[in-house]
Image (cartoon, rainbow, N blue to C red):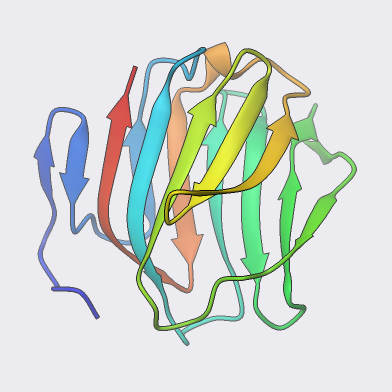
Length: 146
């Protein structure tokens, strides 16, 4: 486990936030970047990162260790849409840098600096107001830049 602090925030950077993590943001438009340093734990068989609007999830990033996949998805009117599935290359109890970058209708996902996947937005990420992180993961830091 990386530290066990109570959570410190420096405007757009959060260190050791308590779980579940909820970070308010003002949109995730072209050029926006979310960088997470995290440690998947054995506490659960999965975790998720959601980029959420008031009504829906623009991107649901969900490594599932029991299935060996990462599922990317979104919701519309509260219902799940079709899943994009990728081989899971994350391992529990290893530290990773996970980045989400908005590229005009596509959210690119990077793992330790290497391109992992692209997710074509089904709803605009400009309305994202909250980043949610929950499940079997410890978040060391989160940094949002626009």
